[in-house]
Amino acid sequence: NFDLGYISNFGISKNQFEGMFNGQIDMYQRQTSFVADADITIDSLIVDGFEIGTLQGSSEYNIAEKALILNLDLSYKGDRNVQITGDYRPFTDEDQLFLNARFKSFRASVLEPFINDFTSELDGTIDGNVTITGIATNPELNGKLNLKDFQLKINYLNTKYQIANGDINIKPDFIGMDVVPISDGRKTNTTLTAGVFHENFSDFNYDIFIDAENFLCLD
Image (cartoon, rainbow, N blue to C red; front, top):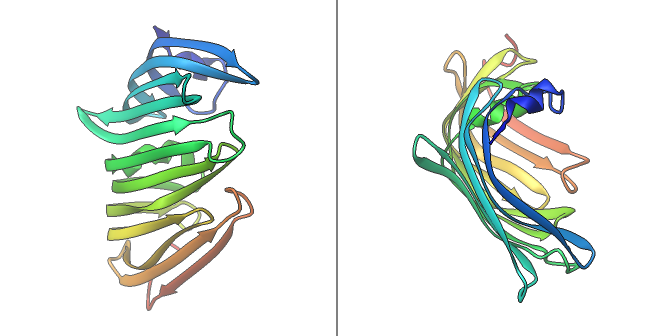
């Protein structure tokens, strides 16, 4: 057993972790890369006071396929919220990743400890599927996520926004929403079209359009 509180106590991360790590990891070298057979559980994971849930993961190296078979589950109060399955092929120069991430009633609040410099008071759920392909240093994401009863506060603006139901489209160089109904803290309604363009999750460019009248932007 390993108490994750030590991560915070030794200053390894600015986030405060709670929970118990259990499992076994066997690492060894194949050709020029290190691979691992693992079976781990992180029970009752809490980050900065936010309950994340129980994380269970396993990996097994398939010699014939030269692939690391991965399986990762995140569950909360008995319900599986995230499942990531597939394989990673470290010895090929192309097409290393063949992963699928499935979200089911994933609580948006789980993300808050990692983005709280910009947003807070996250709520709502996320459902959908995202595939992860390409190479480890330049993964390509494709899929769609649905937000339900979603809300967040933009800290800089001190303003809350709500999305009752809306889709996020994900492509290798783009993440965006198309004409999604949105309301502010005064329940004023409008629509949002937004896109984030990037190159391997860097060099971000933003394109945001709001068709608004008396919509709260700064409080």
